[in-house]
Image (cartoon, rainbow over all chains, first blue to last red):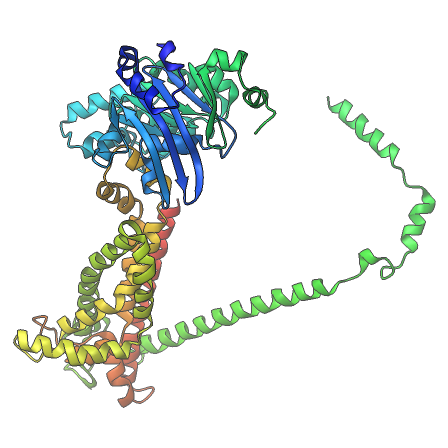
Length: 276
Length: 333
């Protein structure tokens, strides 16, 4: 699994080789090749090629404004709605280029869930927050909804705390609970990939610890890409790390290698707190 | 712990003692001599500014209080001085304040005007609310660029058109049009409603636009990230979150429609009867007021009865304002 994941994918020929290789087909659900994102004339993400292996946590680290969030948002095409934002290159998900105009954008987002930096519960009950997606997609059966909600909340490690107050407003929960609710809401869509954009940066240490534990649990079933500013967090929960600087991936590899033996000086400086 | 603290503070006092001589020196410096005692120009300006703003507020409050007092005293005198019956006022259907009925009380049945006012206001709100909210959604969600470049100036222009112009257009376009299509003269609630709904449309639209644009981007993105289409996102997140604001927009529009006098008076026909269809002449509180005020003498019952109508108008607009405030409060909590 790691032998493939570690290959830097920089050229088209490499990619073709990779997609064809049995290792890739078995291990990778998500891959970007030469993905660039421009805001007007400004290049926010510059030719990033990364592979995200199945059932692993990949942490994207780097100083503020280095393009890691933009990169994450272009995976499920959240940047489509932003004015003057242009994307080049490809994002392959199960061998399909997500940036093709023929792809069903909404289906992509159902399969690739996203959780944002600030918890954004809808102003509804806890139950309706989690059931929002399935209900919208036409699940009417009450028992089925109940099952989905319970299942998602259990997976998000929130069930025990809220099972007696499912019909109270989600806004009455604490910040950490709200964030886990948002994760449960994403899980209710039964995605295979989860994109987490600094999910714990607005939370206190206890809630952060819970989210981190949750991510380690979710890894068994989902492919997770997480943007984080917190070095310790990246070290604790991720299997792979990619270091972004000025829109480029400077270095990527296993977490152990990046943190103990970084190949680039810049990576070492950042990890030791001398950049950013 | 406490002891330690007090010791520490004692110590602090000891390190910066002020000698008796120094203390006397400080006393001897006259207040004006040291720059720290000097009053600056800016301080005077500050006091002046405070006084000026307070005066403005006091003046506005005094004017409001005076108007309220006048309208209340005049409006209530119909019932107190002229022995009018409150029940007759709200349920009677004949308006002839100069005459008295068999009980010796003035004939002041304002029900036709109340019905007219409420009908015109309600129906025009029903007509303009969907249009206004639809336009606001288009401007904010579907085509923000066109919305900003074309729709916004159009709406601002519509707000600025004087009501007499609306009334004139209603008189020359809407009334003949209705006359051709439906039996009757064309004057009536329908004509008033059409003119009013166009009049309040820009107000409601721009307030609804504000409400919709106030929905945070993060909520929209959260919905989109779950795979919602734009339309699903608008229905489930934007409209639901903006609901109090949208209600406020519609109520503001209703308040404006309820108080509008000139345009309505020009097209409604001004018959003091309860209309049986939308195409019969009717009248509103405002139209009777503007029609009658030139022909009555201060202090007489005819005049006082008009003040009573004004009082009802005032109370209604107060009601609208309070409702808007209540919704606003509910929204923030």
